[in-house]
Length: 291
Image (cartoon, rainbow, N blue to C red):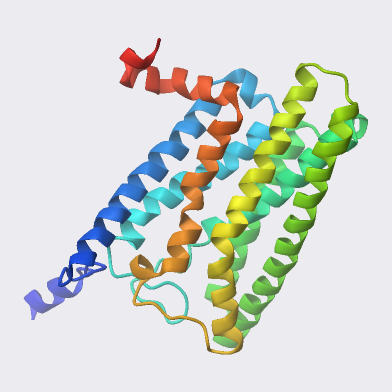
């Protein structure tokens, strides 16, 4: 009896290694989890250790998304390596705690788009009213919103939980449409208004920030949209694809790839961030590359 109880506590692995591709799946998740957590964590540490970057509002949003991406990368060590099925029904799940990190990122990106739009199109209003404390409060809100909703679904009856879940899906649809509209507006602003600004460091900073947020949002929606559509199809028509677990869920894997693409775009688009990340630790890890 005791031996059966002790064995029941072990969670099986995500694959049984009966096929060659199982080894590839397992190796992919180990590699991805390591790369995502190290890359996003490096961006996070680089910003936190650089006072100049911390003083800029756009980097505060990057801190928020980098925290999510680091945790997403670490979560793959569980979601990708063990037999886990999130959602309804759940198997060895985390009560949607780990998948909800993507929800925090979605809301943060939307607020970041509004922040860049106001900073470029309404600079006087932005400099007067959008202080650092306001931006920090805005970055805290997605965490409170997403996980308060998650707590509510776990303590109410199943019927009410389903209603809350349907409401969250509807809200996500509104957010997605908003993000698409804001991406188009930011692109038009970058093409028209910035050309009228005089050359200088301020114009270059605005152009850099717009380029980063546009590319990040486009990549995020491209990688996340298939999973979102599949969830809607499963809820509405029961015709969506069902996977064995999170490790073999191709759509969930695509969505989690944002944990690598987002910090990579940050580093690609910001020379100051690259220098800060290098000084924060990589120059000591790779001293021969310093030159």
